[in-house]
Image (cartoon, rainbow, N blue to C red; front, side):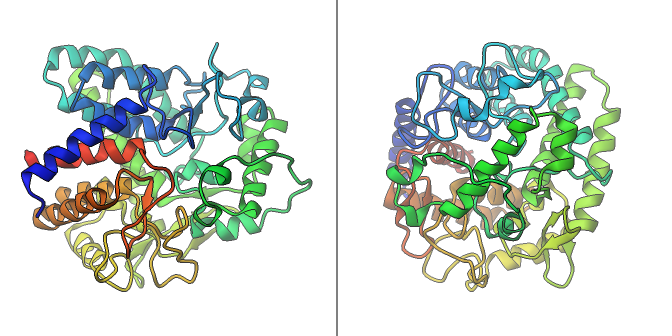
Length: 437
């Protein structure tokens, strides 16, 4: 176990990373690679800020909601207009062609895993002045409810209770092998023209391929041509997937929304229906009894995507499995041939048994601290306190060894992607607070 001096040093260094990337009202994810405001990055960062500066945490959430669309969607990027060398930037997205966009804020035209309500609830729980924090909830509640209503109505495309995504970027796991089949099935009617920036900052072997980026950009151009009309996007997007991670995060956020509603005296009828429908659908449609894991669903071919990924354990975070199912998942997490390499660190984002596993490449194998954080939350929810503590210890040891990187090699522990990555810092703070009580 790490000693108190190392823990305190880590927390101090993590705070320094947040302050380095602090733009006043939002925290950019990294100094150069990600210069704008990202949706779930800001939520993770608000959780980190809540242990340092409550007012700053609330400001992070307020800033993110500036970009909320008129149909309730919270976009995945809010653009800093002073940054001009990022692809795809606001001109490429051109969301101003939609009548749904907010006034005076440039955004992308898609969303990200809906962690916002969960994170807001965490900021409330961590607040010392509960009366003031309750007023914050009261002011934010209608906008959070609008986001959930959007996800449960406009994104539940088959009436199953599961939300669908139209772009890999909405998954939060951009180039996961889980999307390979759906991306390769896209028949591009034209080749998009653009200039990548990310692989001039980070080594190409750690990033998505040009072939993938062509398809990412092509999807943006398709949506742009459709003027972000929601109905046409759902009908015409060649990429249409129901992801385990996205829906597990939504389920956890639904439960937090219900808690908020109870405090504020709001009706919970619709929320309870959403919770029950999604819980049933995740348990039945996504679960594979033979493989003992939850899998994403490709709606275009109506089939499970049977790629063993760490995201398949996220129902633990949402409290979906029964005790027996949770125990089976937890035992799988300890498999040194899959997600926790012998002599290495937890957790590979893709099982080592998958042929696409790559320990250096983005979402195709490396450790991401947010995924470990989700797992820790799930372990604690089911009472696996000792296992959760051990995962926290190994995660903190990894960051202490290599620094606050975006992601990490699961065997060597080497840092990959961007250094000074904000959500790594934020979640290190939250994990430390977890063990300190």
